Length: 627
Image 1: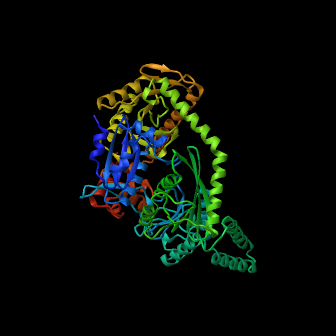
Image 2: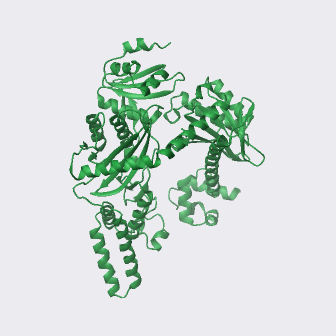
Image 3: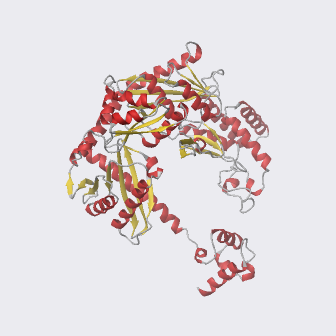
């Protein structure tokens, strides 16, 4: 048995992270402390607030990780909260994948729309020689501009860039692919200069890229001047069609820059953050200022917002800036967050240069921060009722399912994580399994997983489901970070057979997780749940929720199956020849242009294709003579 009082006496007084767990071994809270013993002991005092008292009542044991300093503790806390999403931690309701513009770091760079910047990818961890877990970040080469809150704005900007500068959009790799194929359609319709075939030099191409980057950064005056001059030249030469195209481009530039007309050159790159709080709800408002312009704003709903505003603001900053790729040099807000100095140091390390949190008392910055706070208050009041209603409906539906399945430990509506599984195939061809995840009643797409069936031959859904569940939970037992979370409930798209094989797998590895099947009627509509060999009926709201899960897991499985089926249909007869892989197959097609010519070629002619050896040529020659 875990004796909390005794364990508190053993805790060190060093800085670190503490991890609170409940009777089911679920992580329910993660925090950091300068002195672990003092901080953890404070949860079990009689004078704590109601939220802390409620949390402490559910703690059956805890763990801790010692760090060298408070900064390491903050970094580790951010990583663990993101990984485990504990129920009682303050957290953002929606995990957004922000759009960015990426300029690739390659020969002949491309300018791309990307969702989550891989430059500032999620933290990973490793155990160093000193025995502590250290956090590091993975980097991929490229320049990133953003985040842009509006994906539509990014697409408008990229379309404008490609209209002005005919940059490549293909995925060819240079210098390896120089001159290996003819220019593509984009070249023939004037949307690319075909640098792959030396129709433009690398220097000229890179000059276009530099001009496009300046345009992204907001330096549009020189571009407007050049386009205006060219438009006048075309007009003087009576080339009115070309002049009209440039006029349209100038109009598009004006529309785009008009959306960014609120300027203040003294503000440069900054984020304005404000917090509105009411009862257990909170709303954060962020104004994004880039190159002195307010380019966008966004509001974020915060869950478990009980406590001091400074603590909630601190939690929001840590979660939000662990996701974004661009961190400005200043964060402006009206109130000081908890651990301000430590957060500044953490942000500075992420950015690679000094970052300040500024609390202005007057002036332009104070006005903008006040405006953001007013917006946050208005938004919270406007959507507060809707947020409450949505939350209440989700909790009521979860409670109904828990009561219907007689799951006492989930009666309070804490079915936090549901995993659903489905199998898709056509007569056993390209069988696949899918796993979708719902947390707090919402799809969590970052945790979706796909399985290509490896151990089963033919159309056997039971055996395929057994394989998927075995592979998934073996990975869980191996502490694979991609499968690190244990669900509160498993739902299978099927009846008794699929449920039975799933339960057998879980029993064999000593995991206790309730499993139910989502069954349909003759018209393929969700009818209820199959649990412990009994069919469970639900209300309309419950059925609607189960239908949503069933449709999502089926869609995900079918999409993956369709993708594999399409790939398998792209097959060449050359793939059946021993010794001919993708590289030699491509070389033969490029050299001979047609399968019939390859069929008739002699060994000497076959050897003229790139990468072909005499052995490979003889293999091709003999294959066509023997089949």
